[in-house]
Length: 534
Ligand SMILES: Cc1cc2nc3c(=O)[nH]c(=O)nc-3n(C[C@H](O)[C@H](O)[C@H](O)COP(=O)(O)OP(=O)(O)OC[C@H]3O[C@@H](n4cnc5c(N)ncnc54)[C@H](O)[C@@H]3O)c2cc1C
Image (cartoon, rainbow, N blue to C red; front, side, top):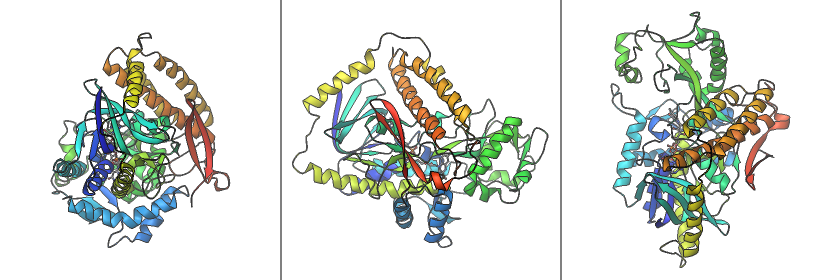
């Protein structure tokens, strides 16, 4: 078994992870960062570009109002205020790191030449990874964390497998969870394939509660052509764009957003996604860009589509809503602390800011603000804690315990030959069908029944190879999360923000100004509700 030791371990190399690493390193800590792939790659950050932050035309008051309006009463107010107050400084920090930010709309966006078809998020992440490479932060790509190491009520590191199959035990005084969200657990999603909610599952298995995981945000428009990979169709949309159904009817007109689709995409994603989901139950829905003049195809984002072999300029193409973002996650306070001593959280894995729906652009701001805060707090914690009691390698007792656990992971010899890939596809289809934009009692119960039968098949998956072991872990994580989403949705008898119950279409403030708390007790998922923080 590979054994490593550090002051601070950061799990995840998206924006939240990288900024926390740079902050802790600046404070003189030994920092180790791990990610599933090459550092910075396979992150949702690489797709994103817009930060909602107060600027010369959008005040902190505007930001507060818009965030709370989207969150529909479920936001954790202290966290929102921390986000808003620290946003401008976080933008300054990003500029200091060499990110070309320009003021735009409700905040800032990553700037690059207008005719460049490179995704701005790729420029963002590459610039930051370059900065990391010139720092003392140790980078360990290709490590998949399976468990947090918890001893005597505090986090002491993490355990995982390297891509070559070698088990790896990392002892660390503090740990930052920056594992992103879980969008790829749905068949239709615009996330990176590997964003499967590992962080939520890691937290639950370490006896930490997670909150409001039934609130998932859908993005109305992703490419849904069968032979092309699903990807988000980013704004700004040209004014000539048409959204049509099979009969050629203009759906933007029907939705009343023909004139302001770009504003609607920032502020009304839930309404648009539900409408699109319903429309696509009646038949296919298409974007038609054939009326867009040639010169507009030289600029982003159309020049990105123009690079594809698909004739976007010549014929309408299928679109669909898709899962985009998870509002729920692990609880943190204004210092980025979770309720488990030594464990901090930042980015999409964390819960509290967005409430029942996220204002567009607030996710990157959250990563930037809370990445820096978590890096700072985790560094302070490690410093205080390490005072005299630091060990250079994992203790013998710890090692032996984890060696036994490794045997448990690899030993399974009997089982069915259900292919993990088919089971994962089954789970993703189930998520889309039963826990999608529109939910109701009957279908949620049916979803839970179907999930129970897939769970039995997952238990019997034979981990003959390492690949199977990784896949099996994915299956277990996805099934756990899906169970939480279905059960939590069944209990919430109202509609709010991104959450829509067809059988309870109204927001019910009298009974449901509550956050949902999920935790594992002896391996069983328990769900309770508690009044919102205000
Ligand atoms: C297409 C798209 C466009 C978007 N555009 C915007 C936008 O313009 N503005 C905005 O505010 N938001 C946007 N978002 C949302 C935003 O991109 C994400 O919420 C944010 O980037 C998440 O960053 P993160 O650092 O939390 O996680 P990520 O950037 O997703 O990184 C997660 C990291 O965790 C690692 N990881 C996960 N599990 C494990 C494990 N078990 N072991 C080891 N490593 C692990 C991954 O390998 C990865 O390195 C967009 C999202 C998408 C999908």
